[in-house]
Image 1 (tube, rainbow, N blue to C red):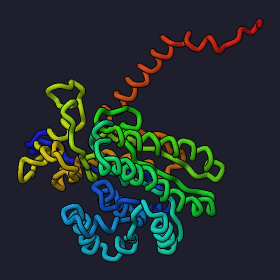
Image 2 (cartoon, rainbow, N blue to C red; image 1 turned 120 degrees about the horizontal axis):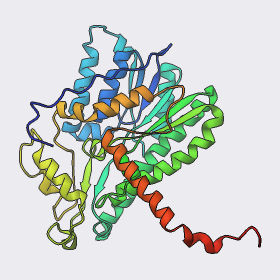
Image 3 (cartoon, rainbow, N blue to C red; image 1 turned 90 degrees about the horizontal axis):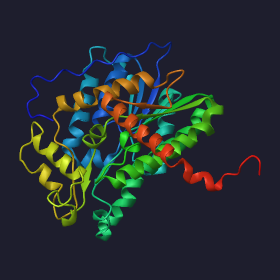
Image 4 (cartoon, rainbow, N blue to C red; image 1 turned 180 degrees about the vertical axis):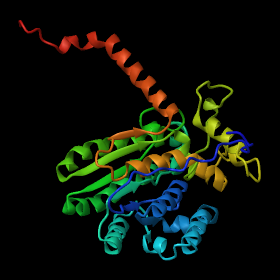
Length: 352
């Protein structure tokens, strides 16, 4: 990312498909850049939104919650007063707690009578190699934390919503992951593992819920869309994986370079924090304009796909992501052909 964004193209305005009646959305992380942008566009389009906000993050992370508070002020000052407020319901929601998921879903149904689309978009990223994530009890606990957020969070939200969908014989679950659910990424082992796990869960779920006319879509934007718009936690590095001695393109080095070049950074230490000898957590210092530009393409895709009569089972956002996944699948196909004879020992000739 360049520090000079004066020539950057403005984010594309999403064009939503027409529909006969407003859609009712449930968004699990509405105070994220993607959640805020999607809420704004959905309300402008006439849809209803139940916006889940994690209480601890909203109350203790002032910089993180500032954009959502500005959005709420915007809702209250709309020229069409009352229209946006009537179609927005903000609920406390920590997806890791199943009881909060159930309570939030009940509140959404009470407010709007139904839920049409569940959008699971809350995630966090742990930066560190496999060995680095195993050096201390605290680092090891991040394994559980990563799966509690990226795997069990969506699972809880889905389980709380499924009875509502089954009762009305209609619904659409949209899960936001990343192309890291296709591509292993050095230095993001836990993050990739949690993404692959939740995608496997949802791929299986899709078959189970199809008889109830409930649809499942996985949306995969580029890596930086999720990583730079949620909390980043870094474990202490090990010298063996230092850039000077290890040629692997580790995510730690890539992300620290991006953080140090971001426009609006008050001090040149954001990238350094990813190399700290202590476990550190931070949010990327993105300006409001940069956040909107970063998430615009993903918001456009989610808004167009959500509630569609025939949505894709998996949608990759961005030309670069599509190209990367295609290359990975091509390599896998070639390897299968190269080693197909390895399976012949288990095969029986038809004449035997």
